[in-house]
Length: 275
Image 1 (tube, helix red, strand yellow):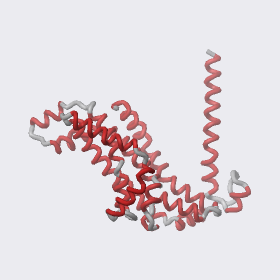
Image 2 (image 1 turned 180 degrees about the horizontal axis):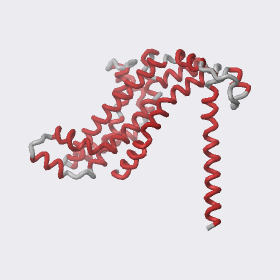
Image 3 (image 1 turned 45 degrees about the vertical axis):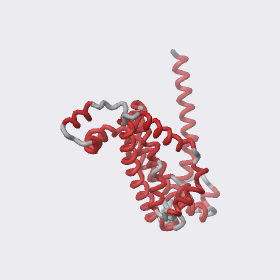
Image 4 (image 1 turned 180 degrees about the vertical axis):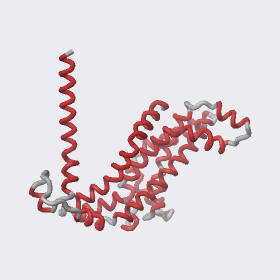
């Protein structure tokens, strides 16, 4: 018994040391935002002689924060709503379709999308986007991010197969149509997996860099992540500006996690149990 307690204490100490190790870069990043350039270089881990918020003022101006933040919120919100709606409706059709041959064909067709690396489709994808006049537009970014519907349809379909069809049959007998049955009965039951899907896609779309880098050229249409990339490149030698820029970019996702951490854990757990 004593030996087991000793092992547990050693494990706790090791975990604490690992936590401290991972916390050092975060501490360095945050504390550097309140220092001058000279203090950052000479004493990287020390507290600043005088706390100053001027670095944040410079950072907000450098990355045009409010415009880029608004672009990120707009693209993320619209994309996530479309992904949830389209993938849920597609999954419902596949889950309730009686013709197994068609369902199997569509499943394999969608599955092939996971097997093709995104990097191999960049050139033809750019040609398609250019032909549709969606290059350098927020609508184009939303269109590209909607490919998350494929992943969403797989999640929803597995969840829907576990749902009993008795309620749907009862509603159909009472005269409800397919659309009403889906939105009034089926979709509310999909809350756990919808939470999971929203979490995954918010984090993916908000932090996406590749699509914005390739398809957006105007600074007034750049997302926050792209503005950070431009700011870091421009102020690479000015750490007093670069550090606040990085913190500003990370802060929205940190707040998102803090307020939704219970839903994140619950959604992932329920989603895994149903799938």
